[in-house]
Image (cartoon, rainbow, N blue to C red):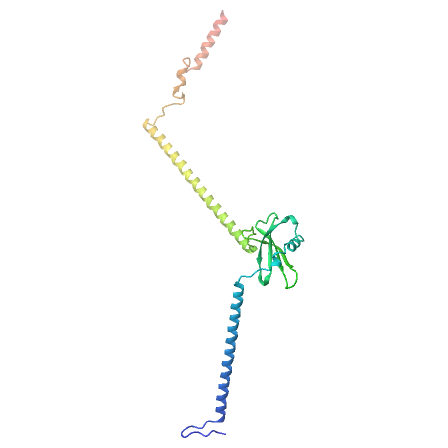
Length: 247
C-alpha cells in the first residue's frame, strides 16, 4: 500500500513511514528515561543535602546514656584494675546516638590517654555497653609511625656509607696535615744547615775548636806537667832507682 502523493511530490513507501515512526518513538523513550534519571539524581542530591544538614545540626545526647557512669565503670573494671581508672573526663557524641563516656587513665606509661566506654540505648530499653577501650587524647604520647624493614635497612646502609665517607675525608685531612708538618721540619733543617755553612764561611773555613778543646778550653794547657815524650820520663825514673840501690 502506498500513500497518494500530492501533485508534484515523489511517492513515499509504507516502509519509510514505519521507520520514521519507530525513530520518533525511540527518541521519545530516550527523552523520558533521561528525564527520570535526572529526577532521581536530583532527589539523591536533595537527600544527601538533607542528611548533611541533619549531621550539622546540634544533637542532644541521650540523658540516660550520660548518666550511666556506674554501668561504664563496671565494664571498665572487667578489663582493668579499679585503681587505673580516674574520674570522669567528659563524653563524645557518636553517630546513631551512641555516647562514649571518658574517664582519666592512671596507667603508667600512657599520659594523655583516656578510658572510653561507648554506650547505646534502644528506645524503651536500658543502656547497653558497645565497646570498652583505651584511646589517646590530644597531646597523648604515641608510638612513632611504623616504617617498613626495607626502608629502615636502606636508611641504615645510607648512614653507614656517609660515616665511612666522613672517616675517609678525616683521614685524608690528617695525612695532608702530617705532610705539611714534615715539609716545615725539612725547611727548618735546611735553614739550619745553611746557617752553619755561612758561619764556617765567615771563619775562613777553619773550625774554631780542635779535638782537645772542651767548651773552648784547651785541655793540654790545663796540665803543666804534661810531657810530649813519655820515654824520657821512664829513663829518669830508672836512674833514680839505680842511685838508690848504690847507697
